[in-house]
View 1 (cartoon, protein in one colour):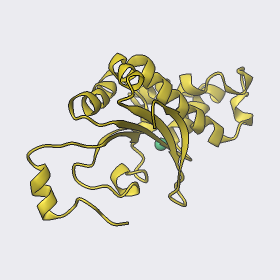
View 2 (cartoon, rainbow, N blue to C red):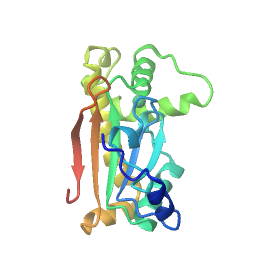
View 3 (cartoon, helix red, strand yellow):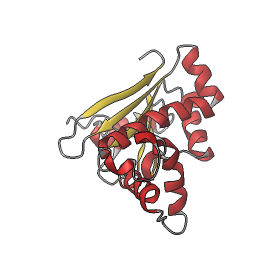
Length: 184
Ligand SMILES: [Zn+2]
């Protein structure tokens, strides 16, 4: 870890304008802090996080802002192993139990990523490795970003932006590439 871009001089330099090179859209999990795990500093990355990296309109708007207005050329969807949101969605599909309050909205937005895995049907998900479910959720999130956002899709087609999905491993800090669209 080099802790770049975190000194007083750099702070003053970026106070007038920001030009992050990447948008990182990750899970809110307290162990998956984007700037820390990728060793980035002030002004380096534009970070958007929701539990289970679930999308809604304001999330997509934030990502579009990072790309279209701030000029980031890379969008990273950052998932991880043992994700509680993926586990909650799996539990909802296998037992019918849904969380209360607005937490349910999180689970509702993970379910489409995994509902058809394992051949569908009750109990199908229970036989799958949880890592497979997390992997599919990252992959699906990358595809949904491109599908929902016209401007992101156009930026990918024109070759200005790439979207990648990666999975972080909590125990050893490694990151593996899951999905990539555009010129990486
Ligand atoms: Zn998570």
